[in-house]
Length: 511
Image: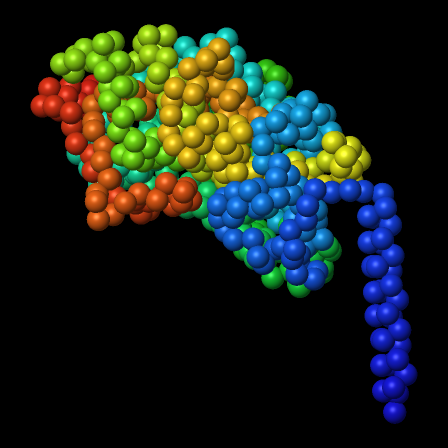
């Protein structure tokens, strides 16, 4: 009986909603002007037609639309920047208003308890965490403390390549994780390290949620966080993930505390934080400290291991630069495998530094940056962006931009043999932009530099003819299977003997 009036009421409400949407759209267009918008679907916008990973798709969009384009991800405006020029103009020079983070009820609030610095907005807590991390990672004694760890692990790295060449990706993982584990907790990681596997599994879980729109709906539609808890089907898993993360890093802290009591703790980041907290230097709650440690492990592990994987792929695909690098390494370290390269050789090996920068540029392993949120309306070259716009750099599009890099698709270390060679942050965006630049970039760059020098000095790399390497597929984050096939061959019997000697030295340092 009451059917028609209800239907009429619903129709009127829908009409009013549609009219309001049209009016709001007209008003928005009068006030703001955005870069070209990629066509999408109603309501969800480009959420469903943006592939995962989006790197080559983003490159294609950049070729079509130019230095910037706009996506609508379920009502949120995202502006993608496709040239270094615009990244520098906006995200560097205007970093004061381009450094906030969007609200992420799932990734930040639930999975991270609001404590993960990567996703924090520019709050006082964010500033404190960055200050603590900077004081330890970039302080006056940082290189003196951390370089011995890196040089030790480089010895084990070449041993792992010699003994298990088919598991080169595991060797890269162990090297990167053991360095950052030593830096953070003062302990080494082994190939069969159960705690390391636990950390890697949790990192992979988080990445799958963070980068897949279909798995991060509460972050795309933040209003879902207002649902009653019994309707939040993602909450039990999220709370369990947070609990498991806390447990994982608490195990490391407990082990370090035991070593402190026994007087066997080695210099490391966590030791400095614990001692600084006792002296009231660092005012953070306990779980916040755990997430600082987690940030170091996650960032330090992924950046280095994927970059080293990029480097060996480039070595197999472009043997010309490898021959040049090996000739220079032989001049410094001996043509008959006399010793491994060390950081003391850095000044004498600028080509290795250039190759490291080219590794970070060539095929970005993070194909688009974590978005920054604009904190106020802003104008740029005829465009006007509203407050709240998500702005990010399209890393793959920039890497392949011929206006930024000549022969951009090719691996050419010579492009970085210039006045900026000694500055890791200049010339590429591998460590982020503006106020969000990675605090541990020095440790990360040194990791890749040393691994590059040692691996090229000891080995030759080739791809298998029947299994070519797809260099554009840089989603090599999986830790439990090979990203591609790679033929690894020692350069000579003398190099094999050197590697074995280095292995004995590395084995003697067990902590």
